[in-house]
Length: 328
Image (cartoon, rainbow, N blue to C red; front, side, top):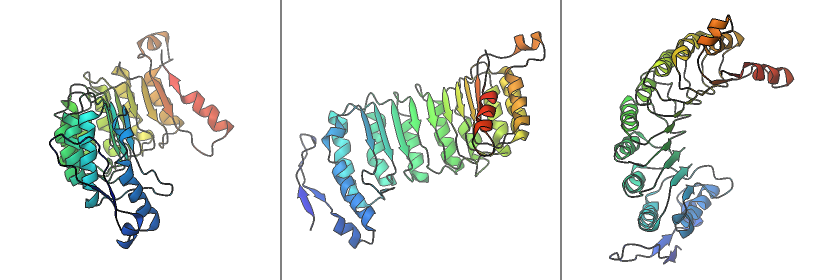
């Protein structure tokens, strides 16, 4: 049997309060879900009824049940989402809103994204990570992102972005956004389609921080990254390329860019296939000690962080310390 709850989460004054139906674990197992996920779905319904999250400055929704890695979508959750967002808009003071490891079907995004982008007036950070957002959902997010005027940080980690139209829409929304400073699109398979990453990079000149970790980025796309760094219009101060597929061959693109870039403070290349040969080329572009003139002509202060090869240990630690070079 379902449990009927009447928990007033401050609906509009003109609204008729309908009872909230909490579907128990037994219902979800009867639908073929395993016990852990079924229990996770039951508990998640209670999360959306928890008024404490409504009033928080930082809201973080994730599976609250041990052994539950991901909450799948079900249409029966839509009523909870609608009630939650109504209350958030009317009484909420959220400055940061994060959802992680909860599937955001387009029907949920239709409920969540428009009020977040248009009605939560002080929202500065939005994270929708590992939410299985599909093509249409990402297009919807990009559409409403262009209407927002407060967001500074957007995290979309672990959502697959392999469609050029989606990449272009997201890029245009970020490019034209008046306050956006940081975009996090790590683990989004951006290197799978060679036409996707250039579209994303096209809208990143005004950002301060860009995170592209674990995207299978290889030599096919590194020239576009070099072009972004070399652009006189770029404002990037931090670029993270950890755990991609870059190698010594790609060093030339960073070398050329770092000689002219005067804004970059941190470049992370941890976990790539760059050996000491490539590291030396990149480091020389940052701090050329060949002569006093070359030192004087070297660029400003940028810290480059590389990975170490082989089993971690004392030798690797020394090597990493040596190759983490800060120019002054």
